[in-house]
Image (cartoon, rainbow, N blue to C red; front, side, top):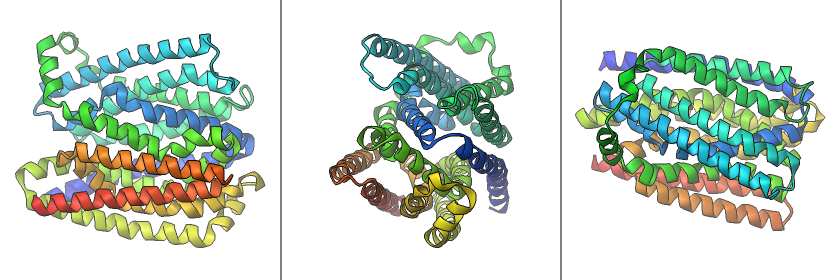
Length: 415
């Protein structure tokens, strides 16, 4: 048990270290980027990243998550190949859709036309990154995935800063996409030994068998991920049309700042927890329960400090680090921190929904969240109040987290 604990903590420490460096770079970068880019520039990037997040589950049909559950190296490589093939096919499909939309001149906003090219590219690259990440974490090579976090943050900042003079409005957007290219290239170099002839010459029947074996992922988890992404990014997907890119830019900055401490620990913990908890669930249920309870309690304790800081010092922090164009972000941060708190504390329960095989229930919960948040934001639009839209978004997210926690609690008691 001590050996297991030390190994888990070591892996979490490795990921936290890499993520901490990446988040530090991101924070320092935002201090500079908010001075050279407008809220509208942040808004268009937020819209693009939200669309990518919405569509990326379809790039792999979430077979990347099945890599962790693969029984051996052969199955792992086959699942990786399935992800590559699906990603390539979906890229072609999205590019064709984008070409048709552009040809018919459907979009009136010239900035939105740029997304017809960059979103398919971003979805394809992100799908590859997800597959590679699961491949390396399956082998407990967290040093590789930790390095990618640092590479992404540093390359994105450097590119966005360098492109500010050439592309005043779109420099952030192109810098983001180019940083994904660097990340994928890094993964390919680190995984080059698997790209043998045998890797690409898999039997069709073997691949079909694997797809059927893990059918719950495309059947339920893909769509729950899409709805989850649509719900989490519903402000980014609706604000440009219901309010303005400027309001979205202020909201996206507030969300990024609030999520920095949560993202630092939550993502690292989840990425280490998922493969280890998946193993323990099948071989030692008591250790599985202990790992979950201790992990969740730790996340709860960690999350208290950011909530207090943002509730009492949000205005002071934003005035200290950002200029007057971003003062609205402070008010938004005080609202959204409550949803981030619940989401952060409940991080491991999200992973358990996969381990318990509750993808269908997860899909239902996500559907309720999306419907509720969309309706409430539309009500806020009729009231012409972006503040109400953010309050409603936070409340609907908290309701969703409570539903997931209760489902998880019931499943653990039965385990």
